[in-house]
Image (cartoon, rainbow, N blue to C red; front, side):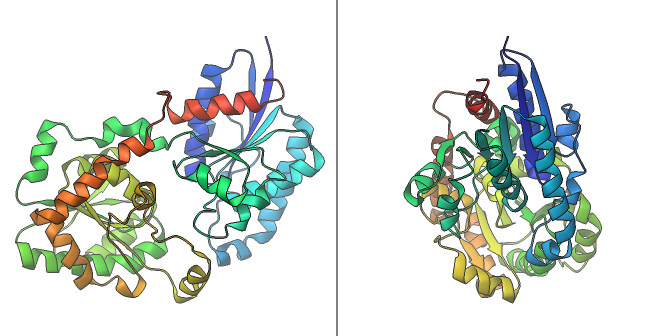
Length: 386
């Protein structure tokens, strides 16, 4: 029986979740003994990984936080590369967090040029800095894409081989889809509005006031509403404090199960741009999307972002079906003017529901695999022992 050693390098929480599912699938599909090593967080540790160091050391996002932690990041990059060199694995799989994981991969390629390297989660080369696609080719052999349009983007931009393996949300459709009673609840009065102001502190601070004012205008326009806000646990105190300023009562819910329960009963959603918009789309919840960043980030984004929308469901559908309001356009009046028809019903709501129904077909995997299984098959086939 063939023995394999696989190194997995994740750099933050979302990559840790993907890595844990990948570890499970690798063990299920491997035909021989398997040694899994690398960098990961709680989910990967629960799957048996002994990490080289805590993932929090490298889970840094944003220009200033990276600068403040630069010495630690550089030290951890070199430590990871040295450990991979010592282990001499059959394949290296880097998972998301390109600032950290690609720095590791490019250095490993120079020292172990024959080691296959797989990149699980494509950087957003289709959105900004498109030259990164071609720049990945010297050190990435295969990209595992979460979004169905990404393989075409890599071909167009001269990137590495790229295969759509499916988004992990596909594995959770049962938790997102309403049953008969929940479908009835969506149409009941007062309507439930689910509010998602983001998962980062800066997003929450910029959007909570705007969202609160929007809900006040909505209640004044259509009458009584119910509001649920799935609160990110690490920012719970901040969200509770900011919600006190709202005129409309809000019920904070906690945990994935409660969040998905709110999605299954919601008439409509008011959400920050991010992965949560794809969750809402798969749950069939009409939405209005908003986003605000600092002026410095806005200037940078205007120079670099090269897509007509920042909303994932819109990119998957190749049409701006979900309305989005960014920066100066993100005002309570603009938001309520778009949200109210989605709640009340009519052509605007029907049109968006039709678009949401097409998300499934675009994201479905042709062979019926779950995303983690599709990813694991490619990682195993890429290994030198494969």
